[in-house]
Each structure stands twice: as structure tokens, then as C-alpha cells.
Image 1 (cartoon, one colour):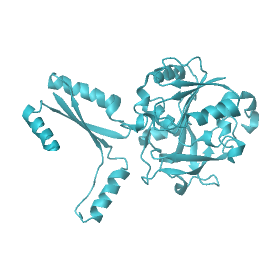
Image 2 (cartoon, helix red, strand yellow; image 1 turned 30 degrees about the vertical axis):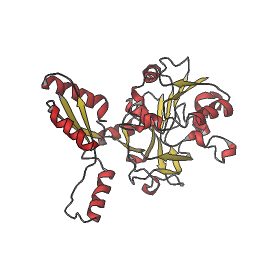
Image 3 (tube, helix red, strand yellow; image 1 turned 60 degrees about the vertical axis):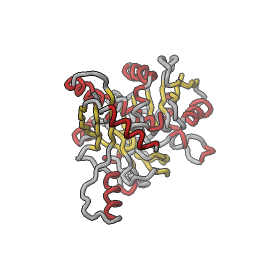
Length: 236
Length: 96
């Protein structure tokens, strides 16, 4: 599968994603500069973490208007998979490819630590290598990851099963003490209604290789690029 | 014409920054301080344009970029040209 990692000025997790796709999963990967007007034939697009455009105005606000995002929008409209991680998630909400917004963390602190996520659904390509309800350990590193939306819209997300990952205690139970940024409904990651655009604040690319001591994030990429590994039948 | 735009977190949404500033103000002796909202302001030069048209254009700017209406609300004030002399003297004040 040809994968494209979008580079905005200020992206800083781009090479981590490139490394996982290229060297761990042995995929064809290219960088897509923010001024590009095509996606160079890529099938899977990743918007990496960082501080695109210095977080000017709001995290992701400037990047959402960059030329490459028009092509990403068209790719998504055709059902092409798009993954936004951390700042990439912010870009997707600012581009309105995903609903809601990411605000300043509840405690005002930049949170850099491991979190535990519960997989709320594994019938998406992205999550197809995980078990339903599986608890993953993934690191966060952000100051603005507090997911927010109108109460009625949060209900809609629940009803449409668009909440893919929730912050939980290591036991797998939702617990406010483990929701470090204060996200509404403990939301860590959501998907669009069609199921092809996923955004999450934690960093799967930082725990996707044995040498890093944690491989919980690898499945998210494998689900997309290695369909043979998808869990099937009752297990799923 | 110029526009002054202010953007604040919506009232229904917790504003941790405003809350922290309120606590800090109270701590340094401003006990009378109630709610504090922390926002952003923009001054936008619009060139020669009718006030009504200016307001509509700036509202569109707010909807599309200046505010994220999921979590923020905005207010627009359209003002005339600043008197040329007033601005110059302010600048001179800064350099002296």
C-alpha cells in the first residue's frame, strides 16, 4: 500500500510515522509537503503530530487551510483512509473532516505520559487488529487534547459509534482520574460516520516496535496496511 | 474601515485559562474578581468599504477561520479609520 505522510511546517512526528510504515511494516511511503496539490497516488494518508504553523490562532487551524488538505478532503470523500495523530487530529477537526474541537487540557498542563485506551469498536480497518474492548497503553504528549463538542453532538457520536478510543484506567474502566486532559466522555479518538477518517490524540507511532518496549500502537497501522492480519469472525 | 473582533470560549464550556487567571488575581489581592474569560482579539484593516458589507465579510471570516464555533463565540465591532495623527503620536511614544 502506498502511504503518504503529510509535512506541515512545524510537524515533528512525521519521521516516526514514516519509520513505522517504511521500516517496521515495509510499505511504500512518501512525504507530502503541505503545498502539494496532489497526493502522489497514495492510498493511505497520515497527518502526523507536531506544532503545524506554530499552533498560530488554534492548533491545526492554519494547516487545515493548506493546499494539500484540499486533496486530502477529496481522498476522504472517496472513502480513502486518513489517520490524524495528535496535531493531525486537531487538523482534521479544524478542517471539519471530523466533528468537535480539541481545547486546552483541563489542568492547563502539557501532559506527557502513558495513557490507557479502550478499543470501543474493532469493525473498522484501523482497529481490525485489536480485540473489542482491548486495553492499549499509548503515550500522549499534548497541551490541547481536551475533546469538546455540543452535548447533543456527543450523544450523536455515541449513537453512531464514532467514539473509537476512550481513556480508561489500566483495568479498562472509564475513570476520570485517567482522563488527563479532561475530554468529554473520555474521548481519545473518533472516526467519521463513513469510518475512513480517524483521529486520536495518543501516539501509536511511538509504541510500534519491539525495541521501544511497547508495541501496542502497531496494530493501528497493521489494520490498514496488512489486511491479512485482521481478526475475523467471532473474535472480531 | 477597520474591524475589531473578539473571540471567547463559549460560556457553556469550561474555560480553564480564565479560571486560572481569576484564581491568580484573587491571590494577589483582587478579591472582588468574579468570572474571568480569556480570549483573543483581532484588528483587521478592511480598506474602503460600507459598514454593512464590512460586517458581513468579517462575520464570514469569523465563521471560516478566526473562531472555532464549536467551542468559541465572537463579537464584531466595525470602526471608522483611526485619525492619522492619533496613530502617529502613539508610535512616537513607543520609540522615545
